[in-house]
Image (tube, rainbow, N blue to C red; front, side, top):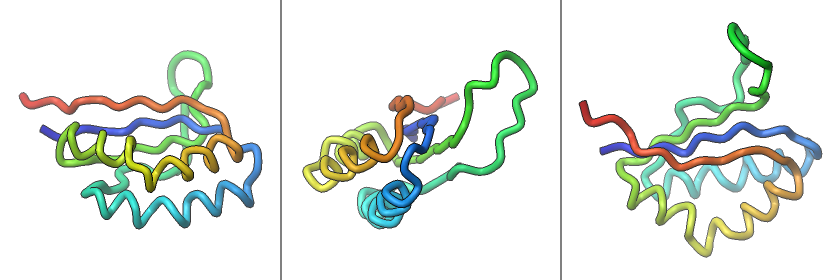
Length: 97
């Protein structure tokens, strides 16, 4: 069953965040992931405006997603992202219906 990384990011340092984006894309692919959403325009229609830069990654399964997120290759990129932005990240299992 597919698994997803959901992120809502508020960029504080655009130059450093651009460096993160450039470095993380090949790593995502190397672990079998792909972008479904990568920071496009957001149009809130209900509730408070809480979404800013939305990212959704899809992986074949939770094991692949955890292997990516917990990898030693991703650890320095997490640090770079956290220096360049703030936000929320969640790992979510897909629906097997």
